[in-house]
Length: 154
Image 1 (tube, rainbow, N blue to C red):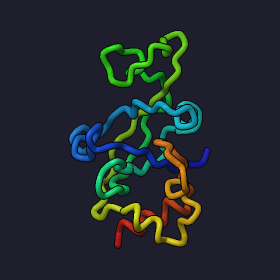
Image 2: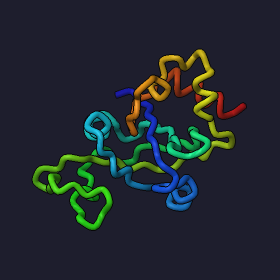
Image 3: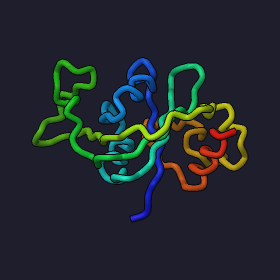
Image 4: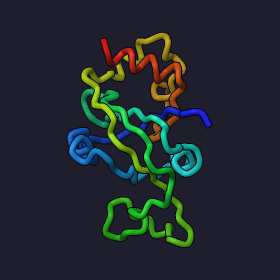
């Protein structure tokens, strides 16, 4: 199967790039949208590459690269009543939510701002900039991946 590319959104107050740099590897938990969950459960595969995008902050930007090191498995935070991601409907016998493990591969020297992504005509179909797209996990085409990488090196 060919390598796939993804964008994962993270709010810095929940999981900052500084903490990811320290941890080097983490589980990507707390996704509570069914379409994004389906991507994590069914489509994101070991070896896939990921853009880490900081949302709900200023500036909004792609800030790092990661690699998937473990494919989808039940999100145990959904089954922990003391966790902010708890969902009482999710059980070990019938998990609703899923997560993957990723490792940090690079912090971008130059973050790629959302405003720059929107201005780039080569990214006019990029899901992140489509009106109403609020998914926290979304696919990225190889062409989009390469263009955003090139933008980060300018």
